[in-house]
Image (cartoon, rainbow over all chains, first blue to last red; front, side, top):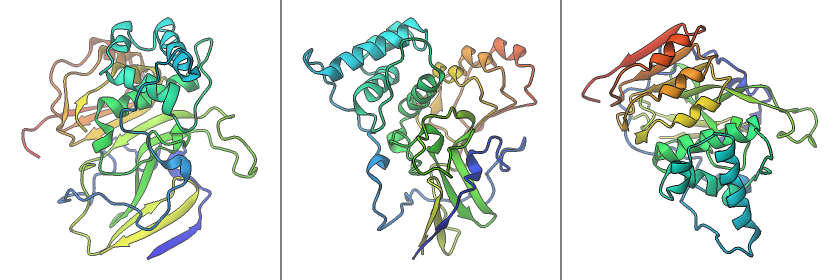
Length: 225
Length: 75
């Protein structure tokens, strides 16, 4: 069963979430979960929702512009002290993997800045976290490394206690009134990273598990019995 | 989640809250550089396998109101 409705509130991306308290947020009703991965069955993924999570083949052909993008990316990261030279020279490091992703695999590639750029650094830092913590093995599809703005790298679940969201929350909202607005044109800053208790699992205690994705201002819920 | 926390999170200079709970695959220590996140108010790492000391740099986080670090040996 799939339920869809408009949802322009984008509540989880509005700064300090209501779920975020000083008492370990989002951990109720998450006990006893198994290792099943919830998915939005039968829902076709948007093209830019497909994460490029698998370490990609690195393009090194000097004639290929993507090779120059990689070298420019690494140079930027070193020159602006975003990551260490050693980590970017290690082709197995999360930092190098992220540089490759930013340069050659990101479905929504950013221009390589010529000077220190917060938005680039933000997307890079979150992608490093993904690679550093083996994001390819995360149970929940939060659209990390997708073509969405990094502020959309979260998911929302409906639990016994109501909606709970985890992943990235931001201040600043895209201009939803203007369908032609470029969501990248407005600075949105990450204020919360939340990976709650039993992030690794889902919920056998629930008779019906309702998984909802509201991360693109459209609520899509799937009930798993 | 398996691995070490990367120091690059320090570049999220507007981050107010970092909460990771019950992810025993997280090992290593808290990067000293996290003390550069001057807007941090809540820092909770609960039931991970982190070791080491609280970074000395955390002493400069004037907005911090909650620091929750808890470890246990079973899931």
